[in-house]
Image (cartoon, rainbow, N blue to C red; front, side):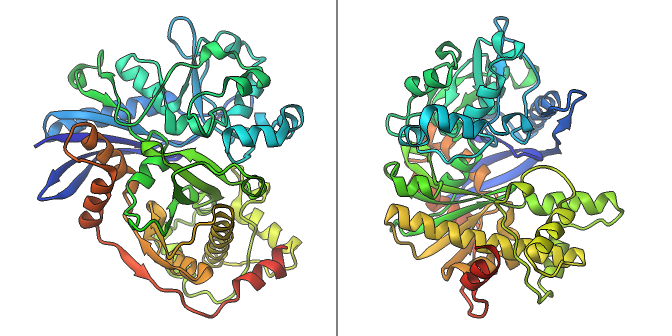
Length: 479
């Protein structure tokens, strides 16, 4: 029996899981889970607990050996963040989190200096203030940047710490807004215009490539390090049982929600740019045509706020309570006021006051406001994706941690008018694993892997119900 380890890092937690094939199904066992938080340093910058993350990943990989020899490992994480190595192969500084304020105003500046249309026609990537391009632009005057010799996205940085190889995996590299959407290679002309030295960018590799073997880490030495969709959404989409007829959309629901379609080619039209849609590279070179929508971040920050006040709620408890609430308040989930850490319920209350709505009073009412607002945001994102691509869809597949929220699943079906299938919750881990299995010759294709995932998981169907006029809500409150 061949065992494979998937390292899946989210913006607030990480885990290591081990998977194998048994009777035509994929069996997964989580062996290690840990939490981590962004830290505000004395200089005001917001950084990742990087040493903790590395330690916990290695701890998890050692635990995986309790199940037997591990044939390979693959690492995925959130996008856009990176580390810089100096000439000695050491980090020049602790990696920043994308929520740090150093990029404030820089997106507008680069759009003016380089050209919004030029950037989008090259990369096809959605304009978000924390994209890697703007982070690097913010950093380039610093001593840490001046001493940098190698740029690595965070999963690739972990790969380097494990096996010593310096290269960037293409699905996550595409999130930088520095990759050419058609060639799927670094866009040197754009990089030059931004003023970033070409020399710091190592070669790219694709999913299924064997990067190296673990060395210098004791018992886990010798495990093959295999490239997966290192952007967690790329792995999540790979692990989504999309209908083979091509008429499926997906929502990867976590801290961020990514509403998307799977396309064969990038769409970099004026309409796609105006809708702020992203064309990220997926597994096997397919395009993840995606709109990034704020996701469970709103609920996660609210839970932290209530916990600090002595009110301890789980997401499941809040969803159950929210289902009993009748009043509807809507927030614009993409308003920048909701993007940064802070007292989220107070921010929601402020938005409701400023838009002439009743203010939620209980945690359950705040949660219901979040879920209604997310469902509406999903609906509007999907309409834009369909309009820009010309692709029609019949169903939506919701995967990731948020897919366990049955209230939000039903609200999404209602708001979009589309049938919703929920699950698998572990789409990212499953997508990570099937790429390793395909690299090992145990699975013949991505489609075979997806079919195996469909057989391995229990998915639930949600049918649209009439009632709320979602478009009227949007135009009445937020237009």
